[in-house]
Length: 489
Image 1: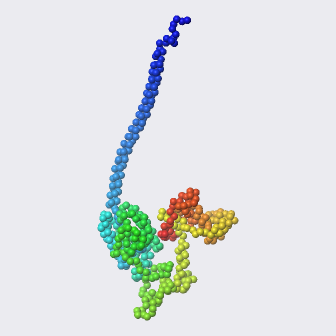
Image 2 (image 1 turned 90 degrees about the vertical axis):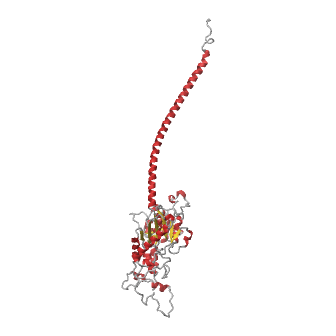
Image 3 (image 1 turned 180 degrees about the vertical axis):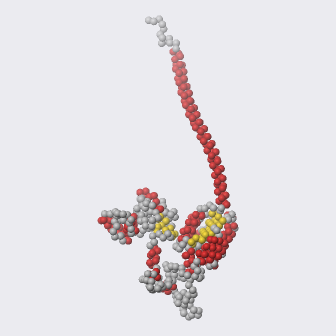
C-alpha cells in the first residue's frame, strides 16, 4: 500500500477547476459577443455607405430637378404670356338659319364687305363692354352655310328679286375680303351639312384655351340646344340670336347677343306652299314679267273673278318645269312625264332613289354603329337553314347580300340570289360575325357586325364575340352616304 495520500482526495487544483471553466465560458461568450458586434458593425457600415451614395444621388437629382423646375417655370410663364397675348374671340354661325339682311345681300360684294365691317364693329363693342373679354383684340368669324340652298330659299320666298342668282356668292366673297379673319364657308347642298361642320368647329374651339369668347349663331335649330347641354358649365360661350330662339333654348343660361343691323330678325317668308315632300328641284333664273297665261299671273285689277283655291293639281302644275319638245323621248322631262298623272309631279321614284343610297352610321366617337334590322320571319329562317343543309354548303354572304363576289373559286353557294325575306334572315346571321375592321370599318357594303346588339346587358357576357365592344356607345349621331354627303341624326 502506497504511503502517499490519494491523488483524487488531495488534488490541489480541484478548487480552481470550476472557476476556470466559468472563465472559459466567459471567454467564449465574449468572443461570440465580439463576433456579433463586429458583424453588426460591418452591416451598419455597409448600409451607411449605401445611404451616403443614395444621399449623393438625391443631392445631384435635387440640383437637376431644381434646374428643370426653373426651366419649366420659365417655359410655363412664356406660354402663359403667349396665351394672354394671343387670345381671341371666335364666332361660328350657321348661315342657313342666321341669314344676313337682304338689303346687304342684294348689293353683292359691296354688301358683303359692309356686313363684315358692321359685324366686326358690333362684336368689338360687345367685347369691350364685357370686363372678362375687354383684353381681346382678335375676332374671328366663320359663317357656314349651303350657298345653293340659301340661294334657293331667298329667291323662292321672294326675299331676293331678279334673275341674278350669283348675288350670295359675291356677297360671301366681299365678306371674306373685308376682314382677314372672317370666312364664308360653302359646304354644298345637302341636309344638315352646315350643322355637322358647325358642331365640330365649336367643339374644337371650346377646348382651345386661347379662345376666350366662343359665340354660336344657331338659335333657330333646337338641335343646337341639345348639343350645348354638354357645355353648360363653360362660361366663355355666348349665343348669337337672330330670329327668335327655338323653344329648347329656354333652359340654357348662356348670355345672348343680337345684331339686327347685320342679320334678319325674322325667318324667311314662305311665298309658295308646296305639296308634302315636294321641293323645287333646281333654282331657275327669274324670268321677265309673267304673262297672263301663267299660273302665277295676278288677276287684273277690279276683276270680278273669285280667287281659285290652290288645289294639289294646280299647285303642283305651278312648279312643274317647262315641257321639253316631244321629239326628245329620252330627255329628263319626257321620262318624268311617263306614267304620271297630267299636271301632277310624281316624286315617288325620286324619294325611293334618295332613300336607297348606301350609308353607314357613326356615334359621337366616330365609331361605326350598325343599322338595326327588322325581325325576320321564323318560317323563312327555318326554310333557309333547311336549304343550306340540303345543299351542304353555306350561302355566300357577299354574293347574296351585295350582288357580287370577287373570290375566285368561292366554296359557298351562289346560284339564284335569295329573295328579300331570305336576305333579311341571312343578314341576321352575318351580323353575328365580327368585322375584321371592328368599329373603324368604313365599307358601305360590309354585312358583318361591328358591335354587340346589347352592349350594356349582353346575355353571353365575356364569351360574347363582341365582348371587347361592350362598353361602346351604339347611339348613332351621323350618317355618311356613299356620295360623300353627311347627315346628322
